[in-house]
Image (cartoon, rainbow, N blue to C red; front, side):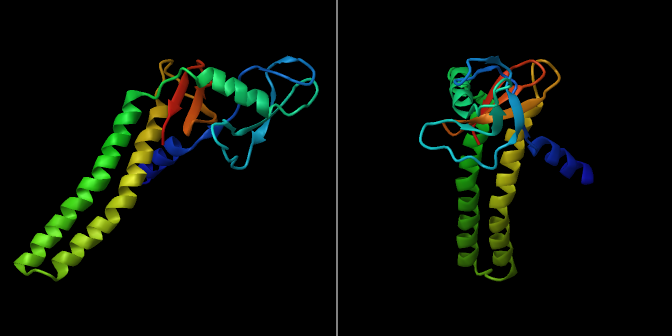
Length: 181
C-alpha cells in the first residue's frame, strides 16, 4: 500500500525550471537565463501567460519574466493537448454526473421499496466519498501523462500556464507537452 502512495506522490510531484534561451530586453544578450527558483503562485491575468520560474539575464541580472512569457507563447502556440488528456477529462465529467445520478436513483428506488435505514445511509456515504476519490484519480491519471516521453527518459519541467493549460518541456529531449487539468 505504501508503494501506491509513493508512486502517486512521484507522479503528482511537479518539477519547475527554465531551460530555453531568452533574449534580454535590457542588454540584448541571448542565451540561457539564470534560474533562481520557483515563483510563489503567479496569477495569470487574462490571456497573459503565467511563468513559474524566476529567470534573470545571465549577463546583466535583469528580470526576464516578459521575455519568458513571449517565449512560452511562441513555443506552445501550436502544441496541441494530447487526445488522452481530453478523454480523461471527458470521462471525469461524465462520471461526475452519471454515477451520483445512479446513486440518487438507487436511493429513490430504495425509499419506495421501504428500506430507508442502513442501506440508504451506506448509499449516501458512498456517493459522498465518490467525488473526492474521483478527483484524486483523475489528477493522478493526468499527472501520469508526464511520466511518458518519446525519449524514454521523461524529465518534464513545468514552464508556465498558457490559456489555462499547463506547459511542460522534457529536459531530456526537449519535447513539449501541454496539459489541461
